[in-house]
Amino acid sequence: MNTPQDFTDPELSTPPGFKSGFVAIVGKPNVGKSTLLNALLGQKISIVSAKPQTTRDRLLGILTSATAQVIFIDTPGIHAPKNSLGQYMVSAATGAIGEADVIVFMVDVSERPDENDRRIAAALRDRDASRLVILALNKMDNLIPPDRMKAHVEAYWALAPTAPGQEPPAPWDWIMLSATRGDNRQELLDKIVAAVPAGPLYYPEDQITDKPERDIAAELIREQVLLHLKQEVPHSVAVVVEQFDERQNGDIHIAATIYVERDSQKGILIGSGGHMLKQIGADARHSIQRMLDCKVFLELWVKVRKNWREDDREVWRMGYRNE
Image (cartoon, rainbow, N blue to C red; front, top):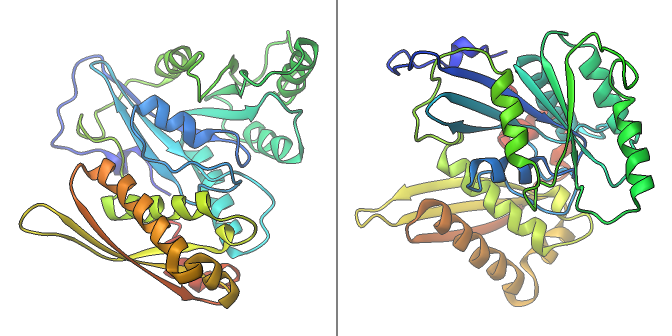
């Protein structure tokens, strides 16, 4: 497991009184973790869709000011895993809990807690009790009756180590939030910065993520598959970038393979006359160009790797690797 010291760059100069720390954003699938991270950073580094389990891997988002550096760990949604890929995702998420200085436990306040919420709360209660947990009650902008909203807030707070009004054995705090609309986003950030310890500048001030550009490009391609296709196909998809080359004129050439598990899924992904794949490619290329701020040439292939999510070795080959 990485420690904060593993990330420190000895060549970076740290201002006096500087604060820094790692903040894990955890929660069940589809509660808005990646939306929040992108909003806090002011730039898209984590893909977003309405489909659960969009995020598969841990991603660091780095926010630096004159007085602090906050390294956010965006994690896959914690759920009951059904295959090797699911086990990898849950392991990545729970591992982040042990590494973080602050934990943002994100929930959907428009719904009551379910078994996944309770599972995460139990994991947080079992961790080192000295670190702050912020219960981020997201989707406050969803229109539900006030009495129901109040009941949901109380039900989530009951997941903390003690009941409301009592002093918990570990520091827990809470905040109402709308990741999409921006309500209380700055207030959340203020709580986080207040809680992180004094520490060094781990990353250069202009760096916003630890992911290489080719990895983000692969995720942006997968995002378009999620947005264009329905039913079981998106969950069966993995994207591997085979080639990522910068040409002399500054243009980027990317060649990537989209893997699915069945021949029928390949047919759906390609579409009649290749129309679906062309549309996915065009939209992915536009997203990658916005990220890289240059012209991008994108080639896509589709291949079948039967039941790859069930095989630990295949999951590893697709790039999902626990450090």
